[in-house]
Structure formats: structure tokens, C-alpha cells
Length: 448
Ligand SMILES: [Zn+2]
Image 1 (cartoon, protein in one colour):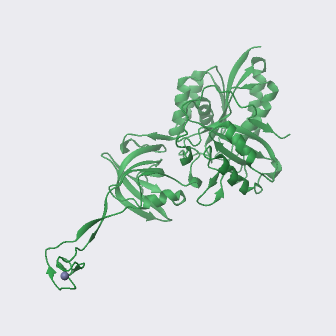
Image 2 (tube, helix red, strand yellow):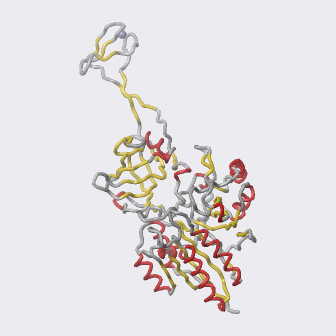
């Protein structure tokens, strides 16, 4: 029996009207059982650059890696392609499904480099197609075929540094489109029990659960966490009032800040990328409709606007308190300038490095009777109301004001975090590697 390794990358089979690439992966995992494949990794759920203009909702792509018996090779490929075709909503505008099949014992470096690029910036289809040819992979796409980019990027992402897990539970077909029936109390309890090893279960600010998506997709809920075991444990704590059709544990770059790239200075910003960059506040915050906060930062090279939009919650409250001279490191997505709008960073995080001294001015006290002096008008000097002395040469004095904002890192509210945003709970839990760990005994299940 001759064993080979196959990697199948899938992307963008979902659309605004439902469907979900993770669900396709879940179905395929089950289908592949008939060929006795041996998974060498969890299915990967790879989020790509959230800042591309043509993304579908989450911009997620999937990769399955497994050992297989070469006698089944053609059947495996056919099964994957048929299922992908059947599940792809390729008749809908804006859906550009792609599938890439790659047979190889290892992942070449040029492929991992391509993935990093697709996570942080824009890559062209041409680039992907050239690479597919170079490494000898096979690809099929529909419509614009952009899905091939994501499918290839998922294969190239070996997630050998920081990573997380997500257990996704799916609904029965007949319930899709109806209100999700889950016991919210059990989810709050689950969060309490499994913290800090799971994250983004609930939005504390709004006191509501966020593991259930909205909309007509087949996902009932998804639990994100640090290990396969913890998301499974958390799953067992969640009560639902509707049946679960199947569930799968994915390994992922979600919650790792993989989309953010540190750049040296503001002149290095490029459209559609997401960056980490230092700057000094150069224009005080101003409120624009509807309740968004804009301020400017600059360095020696450039000045750009920073925007904290209303749903960023806590981040917006911090942004409002900043003043000229504050020293920051900002994290966010770059918006290309338009006629009426300069370069803008849509903020995800603000690290306040150093606060400028804020001062107010006040009149000094009367040197004779210590009563606060009154101003007599512009350049008219000061007068004491008690002893009637006039002091033409005394000036207002500056007084430091205590700042309400403190040094430290501030992150956009849970409900407005991107899939890739690293939440507070994960800080200090970042993983340095992933070495062919064996999978837990039960990492997926189907009810029928
Ligand atoms: Zn006086």
C-alpha cells in the first residue's frame, strides 16, 4: 500500500444568501472517511486579509491535509470537486469559488510566503496561477476565480507559530434560516468555566452572546479557544434546543493578529493592508457623523487620519480623550485616500505609549489676601475683588490636568473585532510552534 499526502484548499463558496465554506469542509471530511484517509492536521480555517475590497463576509479559506492510499487518488479528487461544485453558490454575483488540490510531502517555502502575503495585503490571481504551475498543483475556479487565491493560501499556511482552534456546530437543514435556539445562560456559564482558554464567547459590554452568527448560514455556533480539548470541553457545556447535525474542530489563525504587519513609518502604508505603526497625535479628535471619532497622527514622513468608528465602543471612548502630542502605536486597516478624505487608518487597537501633559490656565492668587484674582479684560491685568489691588503684570498660570486616559493597550469592542483580531484574553497565551501533534481522538462528529 502506497501512502501519499494530499492538501485540498477551498475558498469562497459562500455568498450573502447563505452557504459556508467551513460547512463544505465538514461535509468533505465525512465523505473522505470512505477512502480511509488519515488526517495529518486538523482542518485549517485560515482568515485572509480582511481589508480586501471584494471579500465575502469573513474572507475565510479552508485546507484539509491527509495521508491517503494512492489507489483512491482519482476517487478522492472527484469526490472533492463534485462536492465543491454542488455546494458552491457560483451562480450568485460576488461569489468566486476556488479549489486547489496539491499532492506533496511538504509545503515549499514559496507557498508559505504567498500565504503570509494573502493574509496581510492584496495578491493577484496571476501570481497564484503562476505559483500553482510552479509547484505542480491543480486548481479550478468559477466566475472571477479569485477563490483560487484563498484556496492556495490556505494550503500554504502551515500555522507553525501562533494559532487557535474553533469548534463549529452546524444546524440541520430544516432549521436553517430560523432563529437559533441556544441556551444563552449555558453560554455565559461556559465562558466563565473555560476562561481564559476560550475567547469571544460573549460581549460583556452589551451582555450578549456572540458565538452564534446571524443570517441564513448553516452554522449554529462556533467556540474559539487555545486547544482542541478546551473547545470540545466548552462545546459540551453549551445547551441547545435544536439538534446539531455535525460539528468539526478547526485549527486557525483567528485571534492571532496575523493580518497586521509592523511598518517602520507612515510613508510605508499601502492601500488595503493592515498595519502596526507609531505616530504622534497631530490634530485633536473630532466627532463626525454618526458618532465616529477622527484624529490625526504624524511622524517625520507623513500625516494620516485615524478613525475609531462608533461600534468600536471602548476604543472610541479612548480616542476621544487623546490630545496633540500623545505618543501612540496604532493598529488598523489602511483606507486609500479619496478626494475629500486623506489616508485613513481604521483603528482596531491603540497602544498609548506616552501621554502629553494636558494643561489648563487659571488666574493666580492675590499676593496680599490669597483670593483668586479676576481678569479685567484682554491685556488689562488682574484685579483682586477683596482688596481692590490691581496687578497689571501678573499673568495667568498653567496648571497640569490629570488625564482620564492611561498608558496601555486598548482594543476595539468584542462585537466589532475582526476574526483575526487578537483579543485581550489571548495576550500571554501566544504559541511559538506546532509540531505534528497528534489529533485528539474525536475532533469531528456527524449525527446521522
Ligand atoms: Zn487682595
